[in-house]
Image 1 (cartoon, helix red, strand yellow):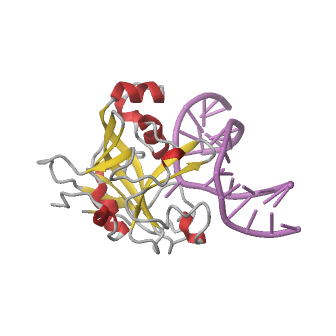
Image 2: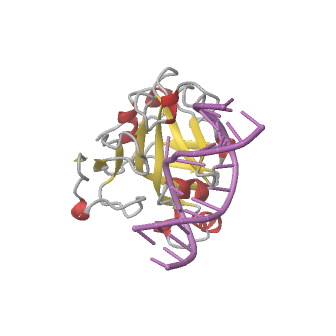
Length: 205
DNA sequence: CATGGGATTGACT
DNA sequence: GTCAATCCCATGC
């Protein structure tokens, strides 16, 4: 897709659907652990599946912060989920990182996750934060200059083929095809329908 | 102040 | 396929 080479605040300030697609193929790093993003979902305060739908509260203040910061929250009392805040302070928009292809610090990830299989280390939004060692203390920190960083794809990396479909694990706004992943990746949180075809209502890019 | 519901995972029938 | 674990916080009394 010839996406942006530079990841800066302007990268995250764009439309959240565009950022969600462009983040697939980028690198997330925390300490010596790093992985390549293979699956994302977009959320926006205009639709009820978003935490920001309720407006500005203590919980959502991070979502209504500047683009390029991390929104980390606890899900089901157990898991930390990592998002990248997008658009401007009025949007309450963010991209949820749902799965990574582990690249560096595999043994560190295995120790934190308690599993060996590389395909199971980061194949879910709660799994990848556990593997990277990301927790709620990183909420609100910069993804450009903070402890958790997002980097552009390595130079010469092949163009990513994207598949879009409905978001997972939500009960509202399930008609929106705002989940994006790399076509054919073995590291996604849930496999797509056989043959690499787009899910119902989805689309292949 | 009490209650209830998750953007999930892993164990189990 | 079902279900519990377990914490934050929005909501309502």
